[in-house]
Length: 226
Image (cartoon, rainbow, N blue to C red; front, side, top):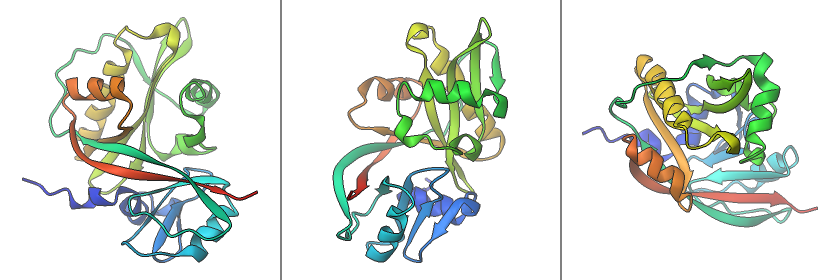
C-alpha cells in the first residue's frame, strides 16, 4: 500500500514541486505568493520567526499548515482550525448529466462572486490560475464550480466545491467533482482535498463519492498586529 508520505506536508511539497514558481522560500518555511494563496508550511518542526515577520508584511492574515509555528511579536494566533485530509484512489461511479465547461479568465468575475458566498478569505487575486476550474451554467449564469488548488508531482487538490444556494440539491457538486477527478486521474495524479472537520455536510458528500479520510491537520490562522 502506498504510504503517500508527501501528503504529510502538502503545502511544502507543492511549493517544492509543481507550484514552485509561486513559492516565497525562506529556507525552513515556504509560503505561497500572497496573490495566489494565504498558505505556508514549515519543512520540519522548526521555527523561523524572521520569515513569518517578513511574510506578515505582505499579507495581514494567513495560515500555516501542519507544524505549529513559533510566532514573532508582530503577529497573533487567531485560531487553530482542524481539517481532514481526504484522498481518492479509485474512479467515481457516477453519470454526468449536466454540461460542464472548463472555465477561463473571462469567467473570473463570476467565479469570485460564487466564492464570496463561502470562503472569500482563501481565494486571492490569482488563486484561479493555480489549476483548472470547471463550472455549470444555467440560463448562461455560472451556478456551480469546482477547481484545483495545491499541486505536487503526484497529487492535485480538489478545491472550491461551491454551488449557489439557489441551485443546491441538484447534484451539481457531485458531477463537478467527478469531472475534476477524472481529469486529475488522466494526468496520472491522485486527487486529494482538505475540509474543516466541523464541515459535516461536505465530508459526507466526499465519503459517498469514495474519498477516504487520511489524517487530521492543523491550520494555524495568523494575523498581523495592527
